[in-house]
Figure (tube, one colour):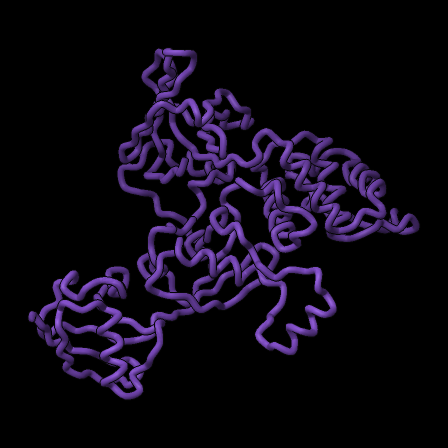
Length: 412
C-alpha cells in the first residue's frame, strides 16, 4: 500500500508534525484521522487540507471527495490543516453592509445561494424567543432572502474605483473608446467577479468591499410589493441607471419617473408646503434634462398627482415604467464593427437580452438590428473577435462579425 509522509501544520496549534498516511484514502478520511489523532486540532466539516503557494492565487484546498493519490503528494511536502471559513464584506445598493463567513474552498457560483440568502434577510433570527415573538406578530411575512441567486453577481468595489492603466500597443482611439464606454455604462466596464473562481483565486482580501447587484433580468417581472427586499434593490439599481443615462428616456418619461421617485422617497407632498419644498433635479433627472426651463415645477406637478400612493406601490410603478423602455434588461458591450465596403472599424454597441442579441447605436442606443436567440445557428470567438451566424429566412443566413476592445466574457 503506497503511503506518504507529510509535514502537517496544524493551524489551531501552530505546530508542525510529521503525519504518515496511505494514498488510497480520501481527503475527508485524512481529516478524520487528524481529528482522531491530534488533540485540539479542530473538528467538523469546515476543516480541510490546504496547500500554500508563495502566490496566494495559486494556493488551493484539497477536495474532500478526492483520493490523496489524485494530488501527487510527495514525502516532506508542506500542507496545512485548518478551517476553510473566511470572512467577506458584502454591501447592497440600499446601504446594507454585512460581514459574512463563507467556505474559502468553494467557487463564487457555489456561494451565491448563501450570500444572497444572508443579504436578503429582513431580521436576525438567531434567538429562538425572538423568532417566536416576531412570528406571532408578523406571521404573514417570510424571511427567505434573495432566492433567485443566479441573477445576481458581485462587483469588486476596490477594482471598480481604480483607474485602468493604458495597455501597451493600445489603438490610437483607446482613450476615446474608454470615455465612451464609461458614458454608455457598458457591462464590460464593470468589475464583475468570475463565478468560476474562488475569492482567494481572484485576490479578494477580507477587508475588500463587494457589491451585490442584479446582473441578469430573467425573473424580475415577479418582483413586487410582496418581496420588499428585491423591490427596493431593483428600484435603487434602476434609479441609478436612469440618472446615469444607461436607459435613454424622453423628457416626459423623465418627469414621470422623477415624480414617482419623490413619492417613494419622500412620501405625500403636503399642499401647503408645495412652494417651500425643494427638489434637487440632479438627484431626480438625467443630466441632459437638469437645465430644462421650469423642470422642477413640472416634477412637483407630477409629484402632487401621486398623493396617497404608498412607498411600495410608487416603487412598483417606477419599475413598471422602466420595464417598458426598449433598452431594459439588455446587457451592453462596446465593440468595433467593420463598415460595409470599407476597411474601417467603428464603435458600436452589442446587446444581449434573455431573448435576443442585437446591434445598437452607440450614441442614441436605438436598436438597429435584432437576432432572436432561437435563430442563432452558430457562433465562434477568438481572443477579441466574435462571429455570429443566424437564420434569417428559411435557408438564408445572416453573418455578423465584430471585434471587442479587450477580452470580454459574454454569456448567452
